Image 1 (tube, one colour):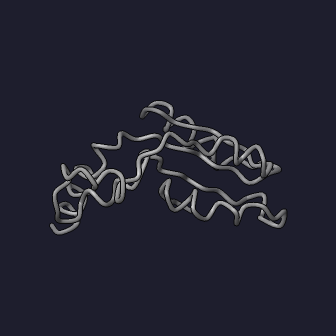
Image 2: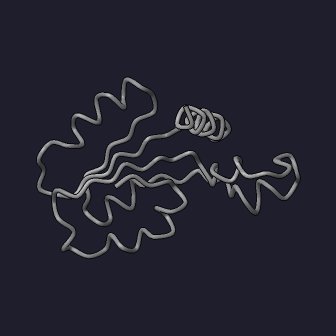
Length: 120
């Protein structure tokens, strides 16, 4: 499963049960907030945008994974990501989560470029 940080943290209580299959994997894209809202029309420089739409945070999934007895890894750059993706899909005795940290203010540009590529 691939999910963003806000969705993951809102729904993380779903990890508490012990019948999650040990081969279950999550890739968590953590851009420290609701960066997806940056692609919507409107003034991103409005004083309320960051507080009420983007909701920036400094959370990670590390402690949730520890609490729910999941394996946890993180990637902060492309080298880490390449290495951790290989580990993510190895067999393990527990579910596993890979948290990929991305820059909050760059994500909307990357996503909009991706949409342009899809249109071609």
